Amino acid sequence: MARKQLALAVLAAAASAALVLSACTTGGGASSGGKTDTIRTTTLADPNTFDPTKFAGASAYQTGGLLYGTLVYQDQNNTLVPGIASEFKIDDPKHQEYTIRDGMKCGDGTEITATVVKDSLEYFVKNSQQKSLVFGPSTPKIAADDAAKKVTVDLATGWSDSARGLTMNEAGIVCPAGLKDPAGLAKGTVEGAFSGPYTLTDNKPGASLEFTLRDDGYTFPEYKEKPDGEYAKKINFAINADNNAIANGLLTGTYDASAVSGDAMSRFDGKDEYAANRYASATLYAMFNERKGQPMADKATRVAVAQALNRTTFNQTIGGGLSKVLNSFASDDVECAATSDASIIKQDAEAAKKVLAGKTIRMVGTLAAGPNGAGNSYVAQALEAAGAKVKLRNLDNTTWATETKKDTWDLTVMASLNPSRTMGGGLNYFTGPTVDDGGRNMSGDEHTSIVDLNLKAMATTDKDARCKIYQRAQEKLDQDAIVVPLSAIMTQATAKEGFAAPQINGGAPTIAMYIKN
Image 1 (spheres, one colour):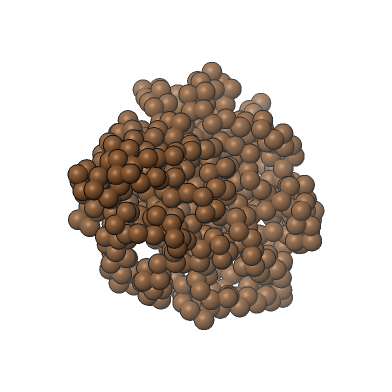
Image 2 (cartoon, rainbow, N blue to C red):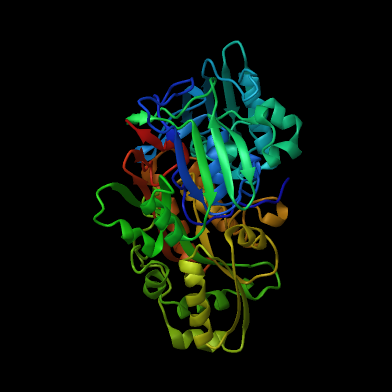
């Protein structure tokens, strides 16, 4: 199984997406009245790959959602809406049914049948570290009935978040041409691999990417609130990680819509010609390399790190207080996320010094954690004030994502997108199968007691019962300093007049953007 991990950083989606027809249309769109048919936007870096099962980082999510359709999509208030599946039945944690929409085609014209979907899901199970997030500990039994256009999924262990997991871009449907050419799939050069509305028509690494709307055979999510406009015929991404430069581009007309973070968000205050909506695009928390023999395998050392930190100061550092201090690894809008700080380890600088003085701590961080990684720098300074010697490496997001799967670090500030918007989706980064064993867990310790609680939660469809179980899990995570909840990266989906970047269930997915009527 591939050992790529889901790397996380800012923005669940930067603005891009598109000219809108009707959210459930299965045909191409056209601009009218002399209006533009293109959206110009930005992404932080080159996508790490175009193979959805190995997506890592915000750029892969932003672009990948245009190329690969999913069976279902998330809508407001934690609801699900049809995508490639026109109908679905998901009320049994052990059994799901998906009816494939009529008229769906791959980028090369191949019909998207139930068997095509089955083969893609089996490829996902074999190759993606997200497998356990989507299907839990079971190996799913996936069956296809082409005559009935139906795909069924059966699980030995119930997993109530399975359908929500299938909304993630990693579970996007890869068509037969892509499965036959994995190398070309990863490079984005197999047009026939794409099941989504767009194809990749130009890719200049380090500079830009261009996506073009297909003529037919695709669908957009059937969002309850229909967009007032058209999806774009072209979406052009400029690679730009400088938030002030992005803001300049929006204000001068270089860009039409984009995500903006940090102080640059306030540059649109009072500007009525811009739609600017803020959301928590990533949660930030300290987490540790707990592999056997490493310093952070010791609970007392982890607790001391937590005691050295002032969470309010961290929050001020990463965004000028525009966010808020969080009390969970998950953002407040995720069902069952803790909102009380009762179990959080409180700052105690003197206690921290007694443990940390003289210790060397290898810290890696993503530059997404505040302006130029300011959050990481604050953590390093706080630990040095407690007597530790900190070797900090502030890295671009893609490099950081790669580095944290190695055994070369002790501490990082995790920037978690949690695209499934579930507790299980957040837990995956530090519980369950480790990256060394093909999982997503970067901590090096499976934390089996938390895994067991997650299994109990996933076995029930009763929300109250689930939340009580997750409350126990969060308390243990806090008390054992497996994670130290800190704050969130606030992102602003910003669109100039004539364009829209809707927020959908806590994020701003690229595929939801459009050009207004």
